[in-house]
Length: 591
Image (cartoon, rainbow, N blue to C red; front, side, top):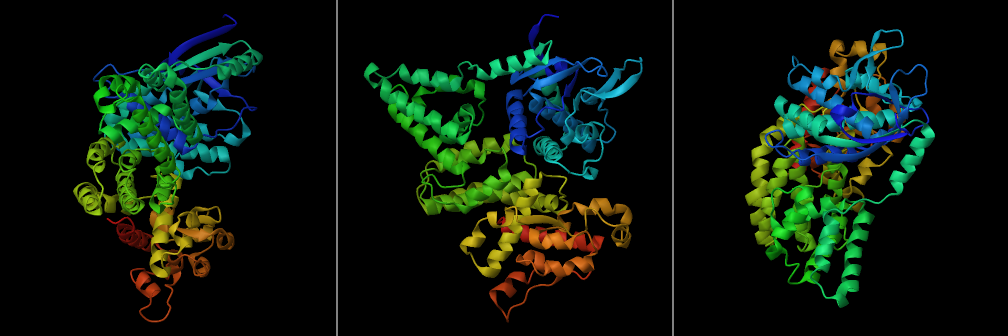
């Protein structure tokens, strides 16, 4: 081969080969936010493919070199791009397993061949080989376990890399469940687009030294013009030469603000268009064309500075919302809450950009209901494309609101109506929820919100209680009442020992517990653990063993009257507590 080869590959072509991430490489560090963003971007680029041709979607480059390991037959070492490539394999595992969840008799061989396939070793034997092998110690064989379809609930998390890979897998499965529900063909269609239309540039060299040099060069290079650059040029076409410096400074402030937020400019522009002009569907590659075709709505020719000022106002509001604050920088507890469970999701910003001029009290009222509805959509797995369109459509009415009466009319017309439609599904889906159905950070959010809601009723809305951070910081653990790692005695004492594993992850078996207390709880019997629960500051956790009582008809007694305590911890008790948590959730999220 030539010293250096560079070619754009579809994933279909890329995964004809086998790859390994050498031991000296960085461990897997992608978070659910990054995984979800990749999944969302691919879904947006897919459009209605395969009904239409569909755009190709480029996800970057990888740099590889020929393996010099004598025991590695036809394997390429990954020098750059391992985070992206590992994520692709994780997503493929999630696609395969989601199809099997929907239809246990489904043929998933078409997916599986891109994950694990037969390879011929030096002795001419066919061996099952992962398309990507992680050689660094922290991986602990996790990717191979997922590749072979090991039940994810049985995989123990023992390192950051393992945790990150498991969380990425759960994020991908939840994304597929939310966007395609039980539609097997929908999931297969996403797979078809991913494998055929998603492109990567593979740069292959003969040596690691060459590969590292290529990696350095690629990362030093600039990139071509995108819609943001073209829009800037469009602005300069319509101002006088003497105003260039003024416009340049204003535009630079927008770019600097987006860089500070670590936000993609095109994603911001997309939500800006949807939130300010009610456009229900627009892809990033159509943004510039939209501006060209809608000058009458934007006014950038007639008054470029007014347009840029509006853009600046939006980008600043966008940044404050992302930080959990009002546009003026004042705190907003409900916007702060959104940060804890949204992950990479940004659809709520469509409505919030339309509401940026509301006074803080009205914006807080709206934000509360956006949090409630957004959470409802997540739990009931409403496809993001569906509610994204709704938010864009609603934004036109929201832009006109100035008074509380108008806001109440808006909330009743749209958000309350949606919640009523979803209430039955909300109760059902939360009633069967396990920690394996949703990302870990969202499980923590659910437990935190339920715990906070009850504490606030019992103790009042003190500054210490209105922030979810009091329940989500590192000093608070998720406690499994039925232990995750039981002794033989604990497991045999459970009334359904053969189903022990299936009850561990149920929402009804989970609670928040201060780390200082949790350290002493261990994995013992319920009768041993319950006394520690009574020491917790969290009313919801205390009440598992004993409801707190202070006087007669006090605020705390009224708050805990709905709660139930348990003298034992059987399968029926776990099921009963899950029903109780659903009752509390209807109140906590104003359902």
